[in-house]
Amino acid sequence: MTESKFGKQLKISVLWDLSDRINPAIHNDIPSNADRDIAIIKYFADYVKADMDKKGAYMAEGKLKIFFSPSPTDPDINSLASKLDIDLSNKEVRGRKEIYDNISDNFEQTAKQITDITIKTSKWEGSDIYRFFKNDIVDYCVSKDTLYRNILVILTDGYIYHPQSKGRAGNKSEYILSDLLSSLGLRNNQNFKSTFQAKNCGLISTRKDLNNLEILVLEVNSEANHKNDEDVIKFYLQNWFTEMNIKRFEIYNTDLPENTKKRIADFLNYK
Image 1 (cartoon, helix red, strand yellow):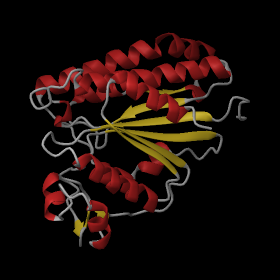
Image 2: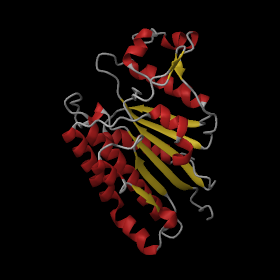
Image 3: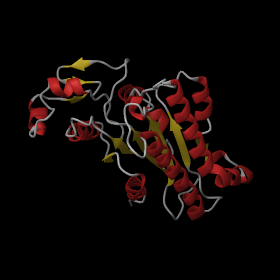
Image 4: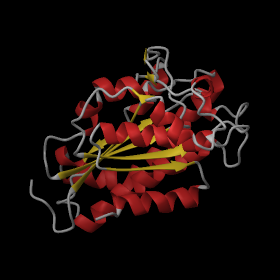
């Protein structure tokens, strides 16, 4: 494979948090968080399709995968998730055309089916974001082929928690929760950055090898009565990403789909 005159090939991985952040009984925003997620996923499918147009069907070898970590316990969601994984590099002409013709509708409809099942069954399949970074991120998100641009997108409200990741090392932790922010004196603290640094707070870092990965975090959404949690969460993530040697990242609050779409476009079109 050679690099196209239009730039590197795309490897886009989307880690989707299906926790109760999409529960309409808790969050009654309009559009709903589920609808915002679906719109985001469709936009990435649209972008891969546009990349095929730009590079040409024969030259485009992009990859797009929507996934969960850990894998959902619901077999129906696991089955649907397998449809949200495309790799143009191993497709012949006929397979590429089928992807091109159907990718946007398939990703949108499948994402909607997944959210419908999750909301109906109330099985909130949260993401173990900490452990994913610790154990799996390179295997999932970083291509050994240097002609790929590796991009990880994380759809999360920013409160990082999973029952498997509750460890602490002093004031550093494997999670970010509201009670932790309160106990460390970071919540409702206008000088939280100084407190954060003085107390050596943060997420526990376990690696330094992510210099070939770009990260886009979308849909950070703090508790309604503690809006400044958004700033604290962003500061946590900024420090964590920097410690892991990630050179380029952006972290955005939840917003209307059109505004989020522009932010995604700006991130993807960066040169």
